[in-house]
Length: 532
Image: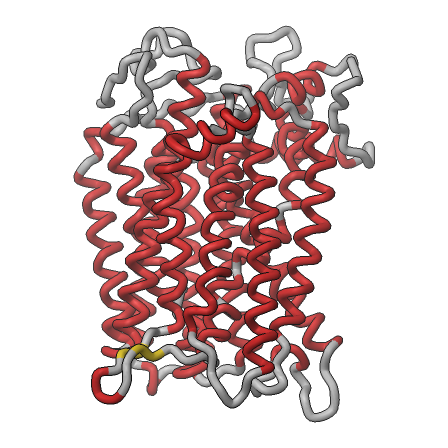
């Protein structure tokens, strides 16, 4: 069952809106646990600042890496609905186990804390990419890879209309996720700091469980996507064999705008989204002699994937060092008995507030403004949208470095925590451009049978970025250590810590990655993925 839309108006179907709401609930549960986790590890469990930051970053890295594995399995052997059903139950079980650990903390070894945390990661790994791809399946606009006689396809939908609806879905998907993140960041951190961690973990667990129940109850509303079989279905064995055959040649080919080329796949990389050839062509895929076309799709996306890793490192800062930075500042409002203590993790809500305010304005104000300046009518491409966000993330890290340098120069006076708001807001605005653009780019650049894999590729950027961030902390910790300060820039002593140097370092890395990104964009046709 799906809602029909007129070909002249871009709208989302009712099941699609329902899935977006479920994504918001999942973010509430996840942020209710993860946003304040570094405070829990340092203040309750007793870990050092650097160890807690690396633990949180590694946990986030695994959480974002696993979707790529589960996405390949979902596209190859399972279907999206069954993957969501199984992983959601595992997700809830991990949340309940974490709540139980918090209640029985005094009787539990510290190392056992990571069992429920990584159980949540496994559940999230299957849940998140499948839910997003499943939600996009509910769009009644048809697909370039779908049959023309699909009864759920909206008749007469123009390609421009399809692109507009897809872009709308990804924007409102991110809007829903940020709304849930806002509630998780703002309410759960306060509950955890003032009413206890057991209750602070129990509420997200209960909300996630109710969301799973709602998903099963609404099953009759969903449009079930038929998974292709045979040559049209991306078997992992065939993908890996094709990858091996390409890697054996020791080069990854990117199309040139001036290169006519004689390979169809290279022309497709330039002129349309990166898709495998149809199964009914003369050179159809054969099990015994696998074609590398699907692998070329993935390898063709790897340069953009790799250059976005630095942005993913910056993406991790609000839940780690930004929060620790806030703990060193004055986070009270009022004086005496009427004062109110602001949990430092609550400032993460400013990111989601800026996103929630900006997403509805994007199509109504930002795109018309860009068109008025450029004299065009198409807004900006997806790659241009990603690039704008990368520039804003550089500005955010420069701002964070300046504020931290100021904090170090004015002891013993403690700066107000609200001086951190600019860096949070700038990262929120950059997310509207880069993160939404990444979702649409990786989703539209793969065949319909690999859409979950496309979402997995997007999420894996943040997974590998998390591991890269943990590696950078370890390397810089060793490089900046000195006698009497074994942790260097990340010292637990606020008088010796130099987070400002770390922020300058990240700003430089992101600027370099942006320069490389602008060069790589020449090999991709931006019109294949409109970003409006």
